[in-house]
Picture 1: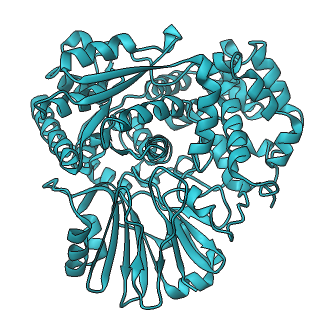
Picture 2: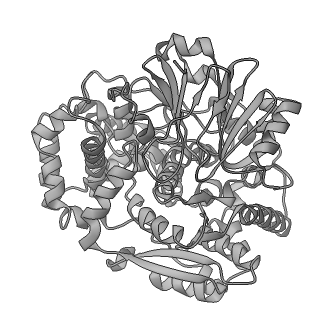
Picture 3: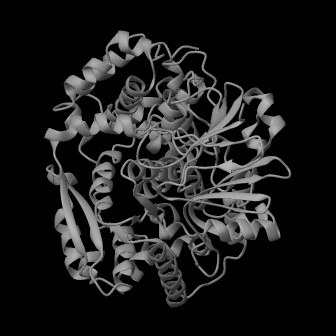
Length: 599
């Protein structure tokens, strides 16, 4: 029996397998986006876009195999960047290695079933195996309810895992026989690029940096990365009209003699719609822009599509417009550039500012008042969603910037209430990088966001949406050199004169007039609260029925029904936790067979 089964990439869920035969030959699907080659004992499969750090020359699988043969696997990985998954079979050592790109722009699942080791870029492929049993890991489900995504190295299914960004997993044949119970992902996944170490090194290198010099370095490096993507295939861009996507689209167009394809999504709700701005940016840049509107009337269809497209539960509502944008852009190019990473690297999230402000305000309160507020918060962690004085007291309970930020990004603050007895794994948010606790606390929050929200949430969203239509994606802002430069910059270079992402906006002014750069940003999310009270109300009510909750492993004592009723009456802003629960239930209905949710 072959010990490796693999189903990698592509836009369908057919899960075409690959295997290692008795003579040690690695046979991999050589379909869309896959390059496979063999150099002597080394057999390499490369999916995505990879280049050598420093020169940005796009690598082929043959070049990577030769590199590994000459310098070794880890040395090659340390010199690579991009958005890729690498699979390597050493026919002499009888070892299989899987690696994920440094920032986590590509996904890789793996695990054991039926006496064999299996890996795939999506769980859809693994589910085609008759030995796949689909048991839910309820501790990991608690993590999902808290964050709205499943962070690596965890997987929603027991016995399966995700490769973490910048990690490499190497297994010998005997490791397959041992099974997943003997696997320690935090130990067995070797680090070849450590974001925490790179961040720490950048902090130590901080020194006064002239704005013009920083702008020139950023501009030059972003041009190199965009040029690398263009060498890998026909390239377009996602364009929302915001700072990050506009900068990437501007650089892409600057390198092309013809208009490049871009895509933007608008909404019917005026408070969420940015068509006016994105179209103004597109006209000024001279791109070939297409704007689509995600209408309320198609909300149900898009939600059901999302439940099918994501192989793990996922609950960032911007996944809906991302699916539509990926569908339309895939018709016009092979590679779609995104602006992901700009917020996390250059102090772009409004939650950073609010967390720092609230922490400072809370520190001004007398200790007795903070102690009283903390008791109230422990009694009802959801109090800050009430608004008014109740929210103010809840905010005062925080002990620092990190606490205030987590209050802003967590969906269910007590997921254990729905999953009694579930052992929720620890995450960097909960443990924190103790050795990084120095300087401005917002620096640490940005790093944690890079490691958690970005790599496990935003990038997973884009990867799954693009894969649904066979589109490759790449974010130039996540290049390791760009990240290193961003981490070297003091907060004052990112937040200045009331402007967040100050340095990126200054750079964008080289391509756009200031009137299109300095403006409020509405984000990329649809009006989910309104939709849950409108076109999605019937769908949501059916999923939240007690029998449906119980079948999906949710132990509810009436709390969910109360939240739903309060939300529908407009009494509480419960849509973040409710949306997270609904997307799990919709995913479970699509992906798990009857009875698969059991222990």
